[in-house]
Length: 132
Image 1 (tube, rainbow, N blue to C red):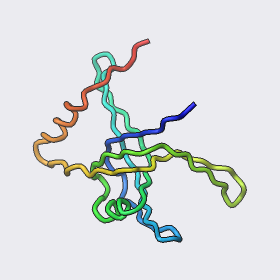
Image 2: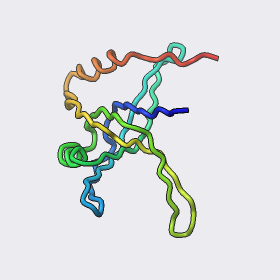
Image 3: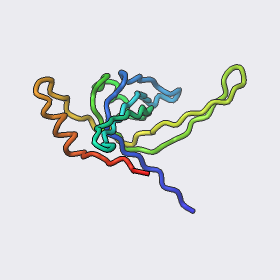
Image 4: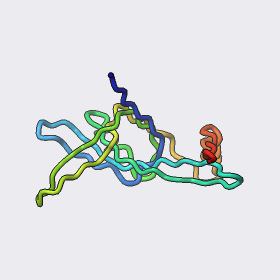
């Protein structure tokens, strides 16, 4: 059976990107992304936040390191990956992260009026929480 692994996220950076280089000189940037979800449960509006680690390689990594900072909005298109390692004291660890194929920078939010955020909420719509 063939698998399919595609992730598309829209969110805000939780910290400034960390740019580093592999031993062969490939740029690698990593940053945290907060993805908000608003939904209605009965008559109450609720919100939850999912925090996701993002890794991006190559020229895009350099652009992320140069132009992005905490709070910026982005669209990340990539794949989910599980990374495994062993600590110095022999404990096995693992984590999931998204390896970005493309990172699209979103325009900065307007401080006054909140019009852009309201439009984004309206465009995204609200999900109904399953009953039962």
